[in-house]
Length: 597
Image (cartoon, rainbow, N blue to C red; front, side, top):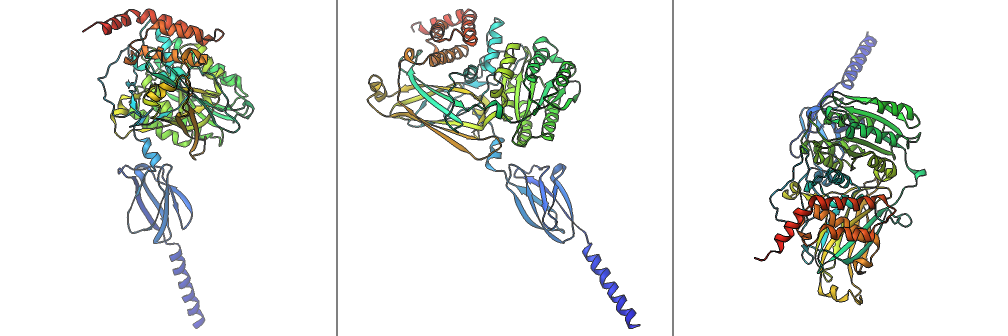
């Protein structure tokens, strides 16, 4: 009997123990940011089991645990990690703080730093239903007060081909469509490969200013390293193609199909291509396919037809999901968006699209934007997507431009060698009294926001970028231009960048010697660069070029152009056409400016 009682007691103890071990508790709560906005998809690790969970819609979570008190870690890219101990009897509210970099993403971003800028009234030349971001030209800055100018670097070149489209239509160019830094990017001037393992090479030149003899021009050329084609990493490309009704024109979907066909011919077996379309519906037209299956890819491109509305937001989300599903670590993961930018379903505002693409790019996927069309072309929307999405931006006005961007300049367009690139130029006040950055003009909305910050861009393989300053020299500068007896430096340059897939910030430093030459004694590409700057200035009707005219540009371009370069010959032709379009108007303005009283 006693034996039976002992067995019964033992059984009861075992049942109690098992009941205790199997007891379940529930940790409930929500995750928010500092602005009290819910955070979805936050990674949550329960320490007792080391199992991962995630916050759901509205930032809510519920996790089963066998402990009354357990500990958790919350993590999300761009936010500070949070670890805490939690009781199952209490509802948790977890607040995650942004890292400084993430916080900067939610602000407006500048192309260059400008200070104490008085904003003029908005002016705009409207062409049909096209939209452009209003920009304000950089002014002169006093060196002793603001010795450092920062500017974001990128390979965007859409502005030049868009300008060409207007001029070839015998039309004036909207002033806000003229972005001089993109005009300079178009020519890829005088490429000089970096030495050894360097990502960049930099040279500078000081010369005379043809539109103001009292001032000088300061040129900075930045060249990025060129990737050996044999070592180009595999690509995971998603073609995101707008097939809405507005694309049903020869200079839109038909042009894009022809351009993509040329890109496909250069694909390798290690590359993967997918096609997502958005129009009447959003769908995957081609599942991820090896570059060796060119006929299959070309057939999918050929089957594209236009019709329906423009649900751009849904298309972007689908393309990024597909790119993420086939993500290649260490590879070139990129969405190529081709559109006229006329989004009319879903998130359509420029601020909404900016927020969307900032969220999408967190997965490490690049974005290349190809703009097409006229009349309803939304340059402002496509430019925002490219600049905020770790990307670049080109405008295709004909098949030749499509071949230039996607074939001849393939590595510059699709393969990044540096991310988040921006350059600080520090001027020497002993030689430079004032300076004005030509191009890199800021959006009006960014200048009006006191929280704006400078955001770097993406630089592709083998690119040559030009930055040009107009400077007012000091007496010391002017006195040494003949014999250069002073060894002062004009200034120094620091390029900040990260390598693709690596968040370590690196710096490249270059010191700028005093190497003044008269413009007609400088290298030909410096002279031609000057002509391009003047062309942009006259198109924008810049007050700084009021003493220049179209003939001045033609004279400089003719003496400095490379007759064998078709882009140089075309530039000369565009200036001659612009002279006919703008000539009378500019002549009247110059006469008015010179009238006494």
